[in-house]
Length: 248
Image (cartoon, rainbow, N blue to C red; front, side):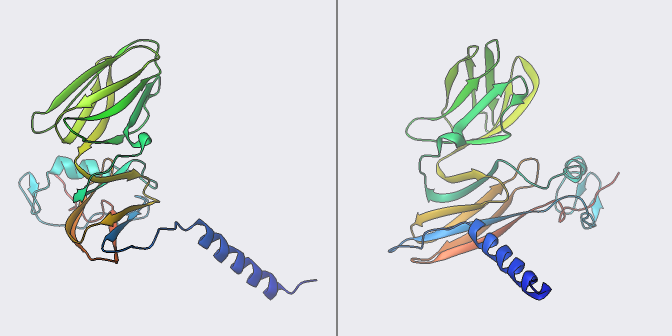
């Protein structure tokens, strides 16, 4: 019979090996360029003590966050955030993975809450897969008066073109309950789960601003300096914990 201490030791080694095996692997910086790695620290709502209390003046907190907005964030329940968007302003834009720019509409609604499209030339584009039994009319607009619209037939695949960069709220004429966010970018961008890391390789040395857009949560941003041959790692806290606790 194997001693209990040996069994515990073997179990610990197994856990360590499993942890190492699941850790993501990134290439080392090469030549005169650098890297940025953004660790996305998403925390579940359950068990937290709540947002810190700060002074509230009339309808706004001292950080100019509206009471209505604060209450909306407090209702967010999250343990695993899909479709987190990370943009590195000033970094050279590259073609996004096809999945990042694909949206499906089916009987359950939109397949994702956020997506990105990289502008190349005169416009950016994303793919809409209509899995419904009738045609749909999609439209979107941003705060700078940019807009787009497109119609895709039943069971068809359509390409939607957007001219201006920005953050677009996307809706569907046939189903008013549907809503998602489209980020049209001219810089390097990434989309994925909060359990993953947003990795940007081959960045020329210089100063950049990293902005993280988690769905239904406050955005996070930080300026960072990229150095040749080095990897800069940031931790973005995707949380409502630092919002002021507001009340009427």
